[in-house]
Length: 391
Image (cartoon, rainbow, N blue to C red; front, side, top):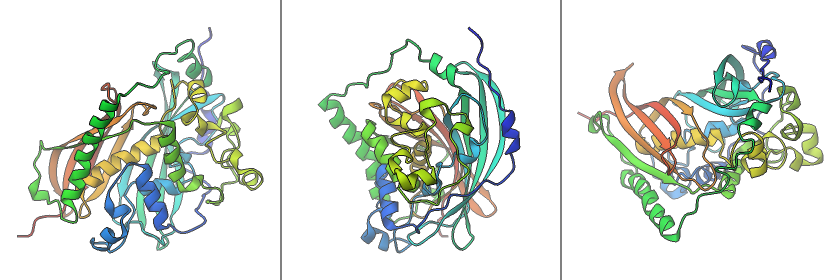
């Protein structure tokens, strides 16, 4: 059998050049924020309970720091998968985020400047020659304030290599089985982290009160399902029919997606004629998440979660612990394996450092995300600003 090849020469035509934007049609609404928090399994009252938010330092609902990614028609991946790689598939590989201080709230209009950054080709055990491509997203509000910068990484590989990785192998195709007792125990574990949110409430978590070596509370959610993944997908604002000014330069086949995985996803003309063809849930590359058949087509054993959602789980884990007076300044996330249907997700973290930089009191944290079998789904490092205790 011939060794798969990967032709990435077309990518050089795009690196460093701004892409066509895809701006949202309406301003952010409180419903958008609530829907996002609910879909991301993030029961922080600051993001869904209006009366509670009114008593906060913000005086109203605000979006989690994970929210900007929902304002992009490719959940941040667009500048990291531009350019033709013939006969290829794509997975989300990671995100690095920088946050600059502004929060998002109802009435804001967010727009994203997208610029492809770079790429490199490596041989991997799973897919052979593999392209790791990065692209930058700059999220601004209507005042011109830079809210966040996201550097996204996409993993692009030869179609035949992905299919060969699952050829004749049905291991892992079935969801694990959870007994009623298991599920009841899981609810108890989940509530431990939620209790932490309630106990902190509107109070500050002071920089002085935390110590290197402290462990963050465990966060658990799941089991994941096709239903939960579909709920996540529908919380991305750009998936709403007519919700975005679609790009006119997007052609899935020109990106290298082939046959049944090409589809007219995000096509503005077809959206006006038959929107079910374009919203990503049913036809095109994104349906691999929601249909086991198409998951296996690209090398996944069963339905799997979205990389951007995994990034949101990480930001929410950090943000929930930091509280409403804390602020994530920087995080770097590496996605190793997707969340699969039937699995749970477990997040743990540890404080690895404390420093003062440019007058800001920062805590360094390392996070680990696993499933119930201990398989690592993601790792991340973050610098979080916390308030200094008054003298």
